[in-house]
Image (cartoon, rainbow, N blue to C red):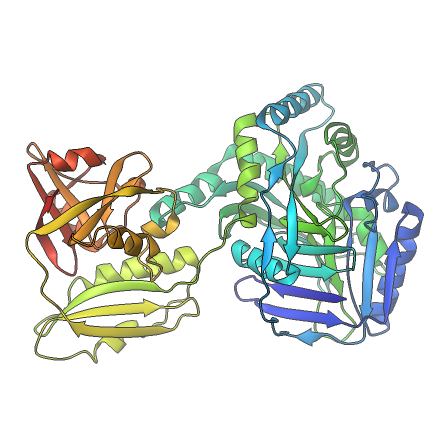
Amino acid sequence: MQIRFDDLRLGHRRSFGFVDPVDVLAAHSIDEIAGVVAGAEGHAEEGRWVAGFLSYESAAGFDPVLVTHDPVDGLPLAWFAVFDERLVDPAWPEAVPYEMGEWEPDQDRAAHAAALGAIHQRIGTGDTYQVNYTMRMRGRFSGDRLGAYGDLISAQSGGFGAFIDLGDYQVLSASPELFFHWDERGVTTRPMKGTVGRGRWPAEDESRRLWLEASEKDRAENLMIVDLLRNDLGRIAEYGSVEVDGLFGIERFETLWQMASTVRAVPRPGATLMDVLQALFPSGSVTGAPKARTMKIIRELEATPRGLYCGAVGLLAPPGSGEPRAQFNVAIRTVVIDDRTGTAEYGTGGGITWDSVAASEYDEAIVKAAVLTHRPPEFSLLETMRWRPESGIDRWESHFERLRASAGYFGFPVPDDIEAALAGLGGEEDLRVRLLLTRAGEVSFETAPLEHRPDPVRLAIDTQRVSSGNVLLFHKTTHREVYETAATRHPGADDVVLVNEHGLATETTRANLAVRLGDDWLTPPLADGCLPGVYRAELIEAGRLREESVPSAALLEAEELAVVSSLRGWRRATCA
C-alpha cells in the first residue's frame, strides 16, 4: 500500500508519503461511516497519521436527508489508513511506461442539453437555484499508476495532489479545490465556482482572467455556494465567527482560470471531525443549492454514482506535528482506476443556473478534462538578442518584458539580477546572445559571433499545418520541435513559412513575416499562431506594419516580402 500527498500551491510546495499502515478502517455501508470517522480521528489524537477518502455516496452517513445513488460496487464509502510515521518529500521512483486509452464521455451534447433543460425547469419551479451537474469519462488503463499521477499533477500545475493505492482501486487526484482546513484558528473552506480556459499569450490570458472576474453568471454561481457554506459552517460555529474573505478571487492553473472564495469559522469547543463533516459534506460546490433538495435532482438526472468524484480526500495529523488537525480536498480533477477491470473513470461538470447555456456548459466540462491529456513538455524560456560592442543589447527592455510576461504565464520565477549578469558580456564584434530561464528560475547565457545570413532570404511554404491553439507558438522557448521539423522538410530553403489549420501564414521558423499587398505592409496577427516578436511590435507601433491575416497563397502574389527579428532587423525575402 502506498499513499502520497503533494501540495502544489505556489509558496506551499511540499510532499508527504506513507507506507506500511498499522491499521486500515473501511466503511462499506452507511451505518459503518460514523465509526470509521471516529476511529480515524481517535488514531490521530493518539499521535498517528491518518490518510484516506470519503466517497460522494457516503453523504447519508452524515445527514440522512442527503440522497445519492447506491455506491460503486467494491469502492468503500469511507476509507482511512493509519501510519506511525510520514515520509517528507519522498523520492519519485523510476518512471515505468503506462497507457491511458481514449477517454469517452458518457453523454453527448444532445443528452447533456436535455439534462440542462430539465434543470432549467426545476429552477423555474423554485426547486433549486443551482445544480452541479456532472458526467463521467472512461478509458482503458494499464501500466504505472504512480507515473500517471505524476503526469496528472504536472498538467494541473497547482492545487492539491493525492495518490492512494488501496489494492483493487487507485486514486489519482489533482484537485484544485480545498474542501476544508482545520487548525487552531478554525475551519477554512475555499469553494470554487466559475471557470474559463487559459489564453494563449499573456495579453489574451489576462483578458480571459478579467472576463471571468467580471462575469455576472460566474459570480452568481460562486455567491450561491458561498452563502450555502456560510450556512453550513454556521451549524458548528461560535456565534459571529463566520466570515467571508477574498470573495471572487481568481486562481491560475495550467489549463484554466478558476474563481474561488474563502469562508472561515471558529468551531464551538469540543467539535469533532464528525461534527464538521455533518455540517459540510459533501461540499456545496459539488452539489448546488439548496443542498438536500438539489442532491435529489442530481440522483434523478445523473445515470451513475459519482464514487470518489465529488467526495473528499484528506489527511489527519497528530497533535504537535505543526500540521493542521485535518485537511481535506474536494475530489475533483480525479481519476479512479479499477484494477480489476483495467478501466479508469474521471468525472467532470459544472454548476448550472438559470443563465447557463448548454453548449458552453458542455465545453466547460471538456476544458476541465484537459488535464487528462495535457502533458506540458519540459522547456526553458528563451530570448535571442543582439549585443553590440558600442551599445550593448538591442531592445533589452522589450526582451526582458517579454521574458517576464511568459514567466508569469507559466509560473517561472524571475531572478532580480538578470541585467547585472549581462554586464559581463564583451568583445569587439556583434554577438548572438541566448538568455535561458528554467522553470526553477535558473538563468544562463550562451554567446556566439553573429554569423552572416543570405540576403534576400529564400522562403519555402510548409505543407504541414500548425495549430493556432498551440500555446508554445506564442512564447519563445527551447521546445522548438514545430520549427525544427518544418526546417528539415525544406533543406534547400533559408527559412520556412508556417501555415495554420485555416490556411493562413503565421511566421517563419526564425522570424516574423512582413507582406506587402498593394500599398500596405501586413503582418499576421498573434491570434493566427505566431510569436509576439520584439521588433515586430516596434514596427507595428511605428505604423510600418499593420496586423491582418494573410492566406498562404497570397505570399506568392505579394509585391514584396520580408522577415523581421530583433536579432537581424528587416531582411528582404523571396518565396517560391
